[in-house]
Length: 205
Image (cartoon, rainbow, N blue to C red; front, side, top):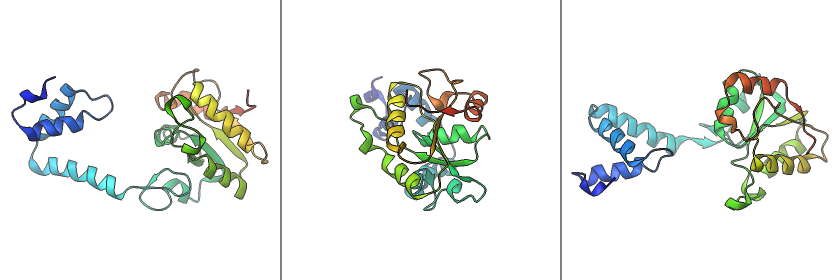
């Protein structure tokens, strides 16, 4: 799509910014921008303000690395959560997916990705050291490795397993109701919930 044909530089700039979003091409970006342009001014400004406020105000939980509006996220602060249970996930998207199952009442730990040498991502680029500190300094009964069932996810799970093996903590993984190669965030809630409930010990194999 040739953006030089657009009648306004401001419109072109907005389309360029929208097209940077995942899965949004130039045509879709143009459709979204024109939709916002045709909305009442207060609605479009409210949309822009919500994005600005989100970027400026949202913090990262100092304990689990989940998104938060305070130093600790709402899950870590919840006294009804099981503090002896930590579910390790790659990103915030997996927390949302697991919470939607209503099958898990423990805490989380967000790694911020998975080990992928091809992409230049090693253990030091992830929040693995803080996970080890949590297990070392707290009475953690079980760590659930809820990572994607692909090569990078398996590599990350094995690395964490080796790092935690010296501590007296049970390490488990999701039951194989989730197909090999699947991304956790796209798994349906029923399958994901059953995989959590029926999780199995992780043996590093």
